[in-house]
Image 1 (cartoon, rainbow, N blue to C red):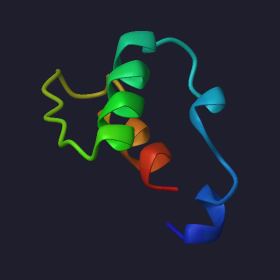
Image 2: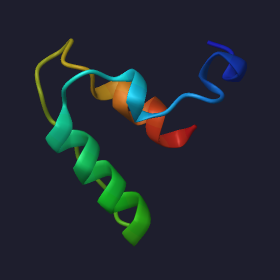
Image 3: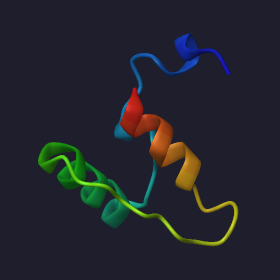
Image 4: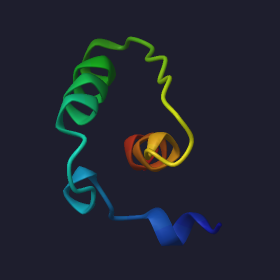
Length: 53
């Protein structure tokens, strides 16, 4: 998808996943990596894209 689709979006667009959002915020601030392991369709890619943009 185009990067313009993701510009200006943040975690407010994601409902639920509170623990995952908190872990990603802490990882970004601290410069750490995160390994997300869950079944397909639970929102891992959406969280990752929101973190990047």
